Image (cartoon, rainbow, N blue to C red; front, side):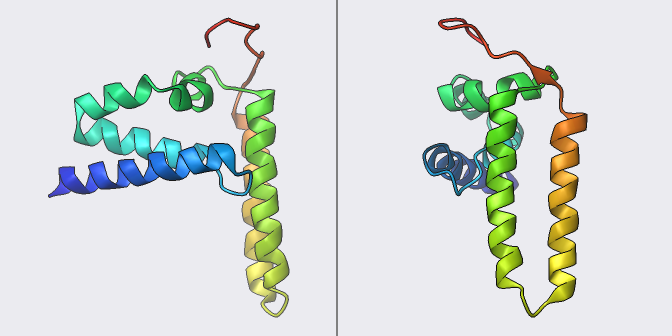
Length: 129
């Protein structure tokens, strides 16, 4: 039962991550991270398939390996988070506590990606990450 739940969550993560790679309003990174986590705990075959995909290599591989992220990836993630948080912030005009919580979460994201995640150089044209 637990294994099946991980597989379902992993598939949902891949689907939402793939949509997020195309639509700028949906974050790609957290959904792909969810998929990697779930597949690693559910099925070695699914995990091996997932880490072989271009979606994984372009968005997560260097981060999972502990190397960091490219500046472009960091900017894309921070931009998406900022837009989504701004929408929530504007919708909470009558909930000041909600605005404060969103602002704190937003600041945490910015600080985390700016300070805790290493910035690695962009790969040269035709070079694998």
